[in-house]
Length: 384
Ligand SMILES: CC(C)(COP(=O)(O)OP(=O)(O)OC[C@H]1O[C@@H](n2cnc3c(N)ncnc32)[C@H](O)[C@@H]1OP(=O)(O)O)[C@@H](O)C(=O)NCCC(=O)NCCS
Image (cartoon, rainbow, N blue to C red):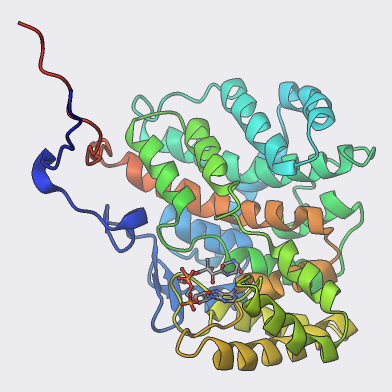
């Protein structure tokens, strides 16, 4: 039988990758690529990162507004104890860590068990207050699981959370094994706040698709983690740092960028799918990095300038500037984090955005169920 192509199916036409398609309404935040600006619930995200704590901005995203001082205190008291892991998760972590070197693999497996241990019900059956309890707890256990994974994978004993500390400081302490310098804790906290949410990226969309089915909250965040783990998404702040290591000295920067462009290779930490101007996160992180008097920071600042200038010459009109990853690795390294923890640290922040999106989607009773345009062979007519 001659193969024919089906060109009917309603004539649905969608851009590749759903680029530019708005699939839902949200009050959580937005990215304005042309302006180099993004916000959380209408508040300048960079300003929040500069001035607010992790918990305050978490409250903004989870509860809906920035807390007044009393509210902030009671929110901290509510979420700090949630950092402790249930015994079944503690017991199984060494076995998971023996099977993988990737802390994100540990996280996705441990979170799945955590959800079952906590008895999380499908969101379909759970009232709003129960969903919120799960959402806050999912964010709170993430740094504990990741820090434990980091230590277990190095033959070290995991460190218990300290509810007296803020989440960012405690995370750094649980990873490194020492109480961090205030400057380091604040650097990590600022980075975390600045990366909590960033538009309708692939993992956020994934989390919302699963939430729309009424699944339980652990299922939603594990699905988001799966999307996040892909090289096209979760990114690798480590790769930009590796490039700086490879360049080594500012004299090599121009040759490095010319060589890459000639071979049609990307410069890590440059360019952005949405920003057509400077990435506001990279500008802020540059400022934090410059607070450290270190040759790596000087190298990064000089290399950024050379990369930007050379890319403008080689790729005119493309607006290629440093993105969030260019300085994220530098800041995290200065604060004492191992490169293996760069992407997991990004995930600690993003868990706040995912859970806020899951909560929001959970209030919508409509399942997300798009269509595909069928372009395969037309089925043979049924025999009569
Ligand atoms: C982030 C990224 C995928 C966005 O890409 P995009 O906006 O979709 O841009 P395109 O892939 O369409 O590229 C547009 C042009 O800019 C060039 N370009 C984009 N990013 C570049 C980079 N980092 N280095 C060199 N050239 C780059 C492309 O080669 C292309 O040139 P051409 O038009 O001559 O073919 C891309 O900039 C990239 O790969 N960056 C490096 C990885 C990175 O830092 N990722 C973290 C992002 S937060």
